[in-house]
Length: 184
Image (cartoon, rainbow, N blue to C red; front, side):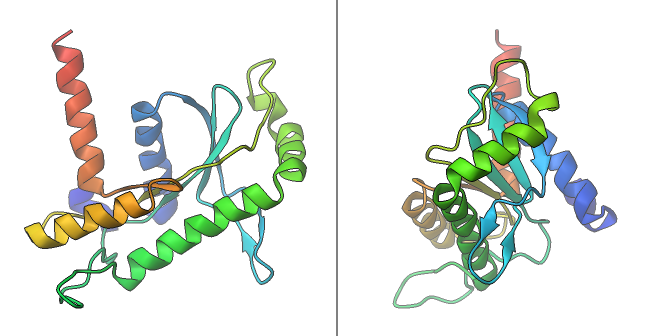
């Protein structure tokens, strides 16, 4: 899919990649596309996916198509590569989703419980407590060693709120899982 990313609609791309993410993170038992999580005073917020884990806890997943999404600047700012506008914007986007979930958690829990009840296993109660965001965006292939190092610094800076992966990170995780399973 990465070789022909433009051949897929954004919705098909996101739905397919979401299923791959759920295979890598089997704790998620349900994913729901574009569910309203609140507003920031100006805009209604709907992440690409809500992920519900086996304990009923809610996280968000935002998936960008890999082409035309730049991660790092091409030039340095004071001897550092910094997040490009696309990457910075996506991080803020997820942080707002998490903020909305934290701010309106109880009312959103009740809304999701009613709307998702038929899709959840019996006894699972929706809970919003410390939701995390996951961002899947961009290609790390082609970045210099210095850019990759600074990218890791940025990922670590946001680790408490967001797990940031490039599509090559996702592929590496899949390959490592396959290797591990084939040795079992």
